[in-house]
Image 1 (spheres, rainbow over the protein chains, first blue to last red):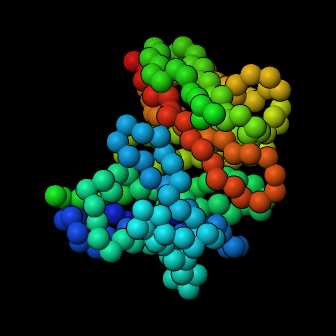
Image 2: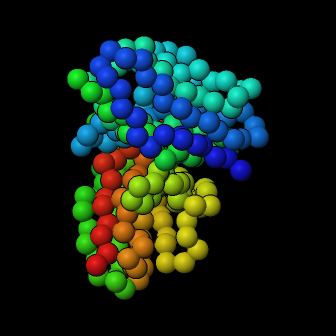
Image 3: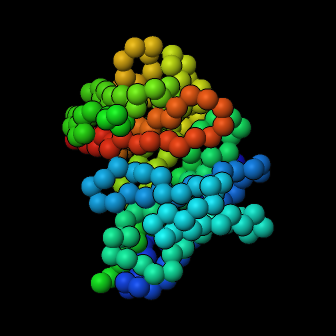
Length: 110
Length: 115
């Protein structure tokens, strides 16, 4: 069965410090991994997906199949990065079901 | 394109009443997903629908919950005889038709409170 684990419910870092939000998954096939973000009073929105291998707002995430991880990283945190971050997995062939982790609330301290 | 629209944003029901949550997908999207977020928990997949079809309802509770996505009109998540434990935020997402995995766009959610 598919499962997404985000071990940290809360994460606080100082502005300018590096950020890493952890995500581990379990899935027997070839998953597609996503990071979604929810800023205060806004709807959940896609931040990035592993297949596009791009950097969005300075964030990157690499899929590590050996460690079954998809950690989200940013070298220098900004105050506007404060939000809820959800790691999600889509794996059922052809369908778009997304399975979410429980989320990590990131607070960037000025 | 107004995005995924959910209404109402807030819904209060007494125990035993019915709750109807509506979701209008983005224009051109024919796939709809419902998620539930209980307090202090992540989003849990409930059901995946295409027009007039339920594709995957593996996350739906066996009783009292139903969902539809008719040919015309919004998708409806219906909860009969609500109980306190149904209090949660319910999110709808939509994605365009086609093969493969595409981005899902989320609505702002409906917060259901059962009193």
